[in-house]
Length: 131
Image (cartoon, rainbow, N blue to C red):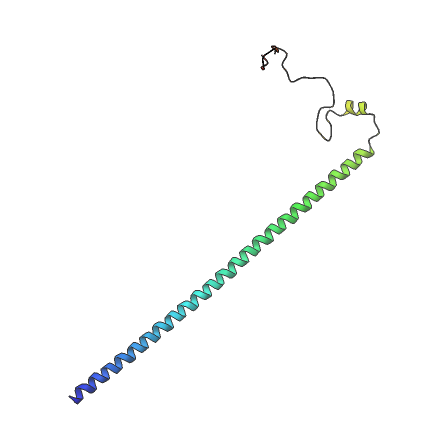
């Protein structure tokens, strides 16, 4: 009986040690997986931050380029307008004869009295429509 109880006790000790090793190995494996997940998340956050930085820099460069282009166009318009003002020695009617359209509003300069109403239309009194 004594031999049998020693065998049972030894078996139980080995089983408990094996369970402890198994639990420790599982815990170690889970810690390793969590470390890998944290490292992967950290690299993803870093890459996302870098992509956003690149996007912001590209937008900034595009805005600077656009602003410089607009500034150059404005300077060209201002110099053109300044030249136009300096050359403004002709009378108004002479200018209308020379230029077909107004420079600012792009309207036709000759006052011919044209109308937008058709010639064959008639106005009937008391009616709201032109026939």
